[in-house]
Length: 444
Image: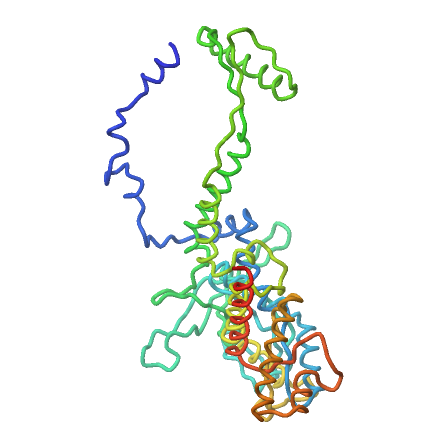
């Protein structure tokens, strides 16, 4: 049977197509808000299979803990002792892993390994007055949790709060596995959960609302790979092709594919034709940009950050990266700071940790997260110029003196590589806006 006859044999009426709004219409089959639930196995597979997924999960957790924090208190030696103890506990890594687990599986935990003055059970509430020492911190995910016990009494002060967990404490020694389960009071854990829906016990994985977008992204990567693989191909025309058997066509195709790929000279008969065809990629950049923008918006991360831009270095034009770091700062304050404060209170109340039990309420202390980003030389110069112009306005109007400006900006050691600018987030946002407008105007 000739090729054209084969095509006619399998032809369908083009007017019928897939039809509109019937069972074969792909758009009709798509349903928004299907709320896909991923199993732990599916989450692990998605995470292990894609570096982009790993960046979306890992980078914010790394940024939240990358520069750690400074503990400010009147007793500098005590502050150094606390930071040294946190380093011994490897607290920085434990917090990073907890945040990573929260993003990946919906819940991240740190077990607080403590010694108390009296015997206790894990389901007993932690008594801070009986703390002897803090021995270890272990991060784990909801894969270790068999049951969440949440207070559902709307007239209780702890309504909606997690009170107790049933944790799988299985241990494996070679081929032998010992499975045990323990009820653990929430006070013996640090728990990070940011996306729990009302009526649910566990937090959803960040990959669940991203699943459709990640599917589209994976499809776009595969499609680009196919285009690159077949970017150019050769078309051979001959009147003798239709008379060849299927086996002869396959053999001829292999021979010609090898010859025309490895040699520049093509020997064909009179009346035959050999041409090279290229795949059109017109408009593909717009399609890929759409997929990237959709993924970045859903992950709430700039494309440059998802792609692995150098951490903490930005230019004046990257206002979206500034917004990203501002969001990380907010997460540090809202999510990580309470856990750090609890851990530091435990160290202060431990009898054997810092030279004796210290009442945290008797001290003035504060956790100050270290800056997450710095700017390039050009942007730094523009910021200094804006600050200098602002200082000049203050000086002319008698708001501040020359000595105060010198001390505020340069300190006792003269000009440094850092701008000693004190202000809140609104001040930094204003400077970022002015730098961005300056850069945009210079490029218009």
